[in-house]
Length: 185
Image (cartoon, rainbow, N blue to C red; front, side):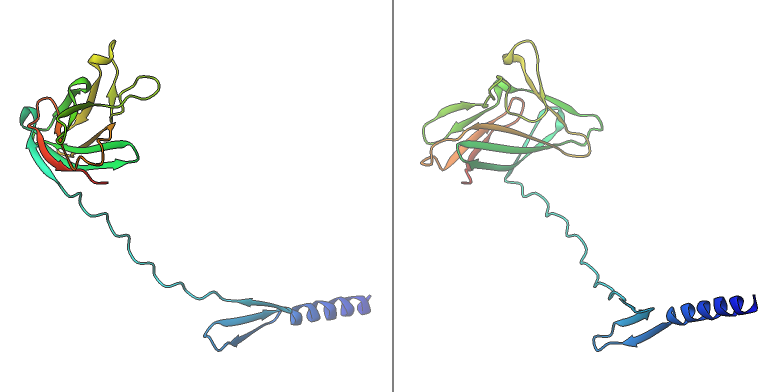
């Protein structure tokens, strides 16, 4: 019986000896740890990632007074393929200032030909504008925008004027016109 206990104690001691830890410094400064024949390498601390750079503030092409004391800023007039996208921002000092803009009255004028271009419609007949509010008739559809203390962004898509038209004018009901705006292509 004593022989069995001695044998078990000896086996346990050998197992513990096999599990001892040996550390060794490598040339690159990391530490290798050997445990029972398994080598583990400590990971280097990663260098800090640079902070996220915020996007630059939108450049305003032109500003016009809007309804109810609001201000409407034209942010971009850009052609992609055959589509002209107009992006605007509405802001107001009023706490609760939400604007409803009748889509049928939103247009772009091709300055080279004096042609009025209306808002594009998708395959289902929906006007391609931000925050579309449908009504019984497409003539009464509205684009909604929240112009409270946090500026609201709105956009509308139009068929692109020909490349020979370098500028357009943009008309929104209740907002002074944006005239002679260069088209970005």
